[in-house]
Length: 225
Image (cartoon, rainbow, N blue to C red; front, side, top):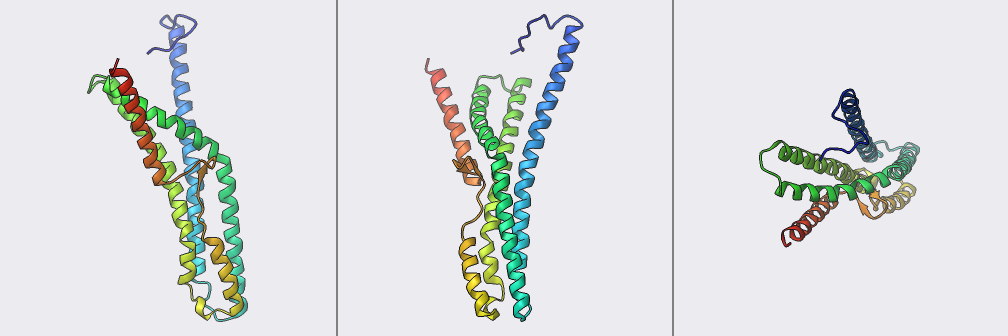
């Protein structure tokens, strides 16, 4: 459907001005969405990379037999873990509202687009436009859920990295500290949206199911009339 303007947009020079305005608006919206999605993905990617670095440090923590060396390196790992948790929490607070709104809009958009495909003539320009739009939304949601799921998987590997270290040769004092640190690491880092749901592949599947349910509801309500 054509956009409504409080003037006749078919006459010159209003037509050219409106044309440039629409191009600029679409480009700005697309660039904003792309940069926002990229930033959120990079933040989660950074958290996952830091978890990998911490796991490597923990595996090599007791290569030296000297007590002070092992303890100092272990304390450095504890500080590193605290920094990871702090950064993950801060970044999650930054984008959790954005992700929540995006997921809510995307769920309904996928359902509506699927419904429009059922009433659109196949192999037309409008049909391919709807297909491309639907694919873009699904990919966007998948990127959110994929990197959120990676953060959870990589952070849950930290306790395993402790067991892969040469902890049996560590001093008894360090073993006690390791026990408390291990208990702290049992809870993986989970990226959430307003603490209502987590960014994971399971959530991605639920969103697709919700979109399909919304599509089925629209389809049933329309064709039953």
